[in-house]
Image (cartoon, rainbow, N blue to C red; front, top):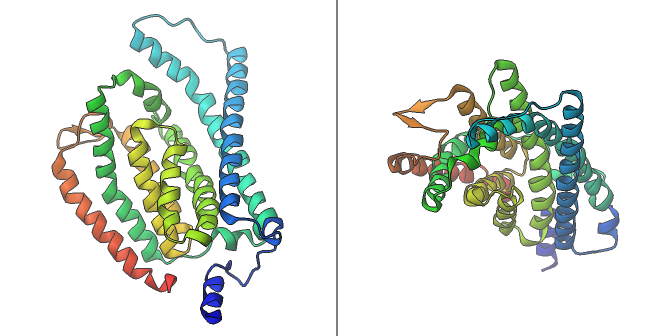
Length: 314
């Protein structure tokens, strides 16, 4: 019995033979409480700081370059307002992700849990095949998520006007702007959100509830984005990212998958691609045949990933 307990404890130790010498660990406090407090604390800090940054940058922009009076139809006024708000929103998003999500997470791990932060969050090597399979699985699952989201929009009869801000935020009108958006919307969340959600929250929950942490943090990931119509899709993606993290014992596959999903959105907006007459950027429904083809492929790739990473979880 003692030997089995020792094996379990060793399985939860950070890599590189590091120890849990942080203040929370030394006092023997609840790990689940640490995950919840970290999630709520950093979440509140992040959202409030982002709003404040947006207001400061927006007011500064207006002071330098006063906004012209907007006339025309309601849709035209909404579109003009979206263009006005987009630059400050993009800047506040990137600053808040690094300063008020990534840095507090890094500090929290180091202070509460371990000085070996990279080992704790599992920012370490992963095989190329694991990363490739994570990317392919994500691409195969995206049509299902899009189908679910579009079906909700269709059934609830949400007007297209609600998507104007979202579309403007992710639309690029030049190569320079496209590359800037890739850094803001694809690279930055793949680093900051994955270290926060998977590297800290899921990693800490995992030490007590093991595989259940994948589902738990996946749903939390969906709720965090505060997009009711995309809750199911975002939660599904969060669960898949968490699965990659849990099975590989590395952040890199989840980061690659997260980047792939966000990059695809930006790329589709930039190129305005239509496939078989279907506009992938609107809320119109995707053909069910796409789901019936891609979903089994995605499930099969996830199974391959599971088999490949079995050695990491022995």
